[in-house]
Length: 605
Ligand code: GCB
Image (cartoon, rainbow, N blue to C red):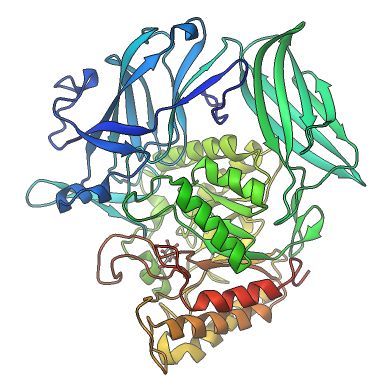
């Protein structure tokens, strides 16, 4: 079990959550001198920078944008006197990719992995009713022992540079909100829920972990604030009569009030929103509340101008409005768990999320999207570093499931994106990861991973572990593009016939398919990169999907254009967006809207 609580910070009668977002001090540490020179007590010559944000795109110097190594953040924090006697934490939404945290010069925690929250217990190192110095050393180098994978090279001028084995810019820093929190000594540490539907009614089973022995009271209120059920004890079942279910694009949320009580006294209180719904896979169907659902939507990124991968509440709102407009009902958090606020919004809007752990780049290639199409194998899981990689992978998985398990929107876990899955060495690695997800998730949500182009019927050794088989396919783009599209179509059909012949008896979904398209380009007849070509490509692909009953979902790559490493394959980023990076529609968006609005939610059900 994790030694810090993953509950999202909130203020209640017993708790305080104070946002530390705003301008922070910031300094690069090219010579890696920070520790030896006492930067843990304060930065010698800092610039100021916003949090949350990626640091890269603020600056005009390329050396800063491309910087790989250590960099430091600093902020003063005032700890109120009335917090004395409570437990005080600093909680980071994420620090990409690894961090060490110091308060008043004392190291309070360290964390590996750039896309999940962690907390430092600072109760005994802070001065109350006074300013305290918070300093964070962050590092954004890539390696094959942490996810996402890549390598870090040294240029001839001695500067380091990150070389991702993945196709998104290595944005980093304090990219999500930071909170200062105070909770009682005896506090609610974790909440776990599960659901069973019984006719019109539902059973909500729960487990509450606390740090003490007092009893726990759980009260479930409906959306109008009326009590729907209540129970006492750290574990129990709430019987909900005439349960209002959480449905696709028709969300209904209950509010679960959890209290630690001592007679009439409330020791701690936390409010958790929940949605009553079940999710399971049966034969080739994905069932939500027992009813088949067809996934329509996107692979996304947290990515926008200037703030990079920093969480932006306005961009989030716009993205959800666009997804509603176009008739989508789902998305995958490619290629890392997103900011918590995004899941909260999906809970409210009734979107289905395939939640992906940052296990991307487990295929040694700087252009895996190209090389996998050639059938290349990389023996990725036979390295002597594999055990260490597995350890960080499992740890990230544990954090992701702990963080996201109560979101009704999360209907599946994606445990890897485009790994090398054709060698025997991949099999035990996959088994551990898939078993761990099953063990950690009380709701036993379906598990999946996205198969790269070389993982096809006959070569893939790991789709056996998936409850839903997810394909990333680019027939008509990386393979047989342009006027050869008719042959791409045949290849796609042939692959799907191959899966059909294997009688896999599982739902298949396409978690990626797409074509780079410049919003500036029109050409009649089409050429690759033109808006016309994107439409032809999607039409061809959808026609094929529609002729296979076991294809139960389509998530286009990508929702919006996004930043990548520069190179001959990318024109200032990946342009496969249905929307531009500024969130305006390309022409194909209107076609997609027509299609998705016409497909019933239980399409092929
Ligand atoms: C993929 C990757 C994704 C890339 C995409 C592409 O297979 O999963 O990260 O961005 O292809 O556009 O090549």
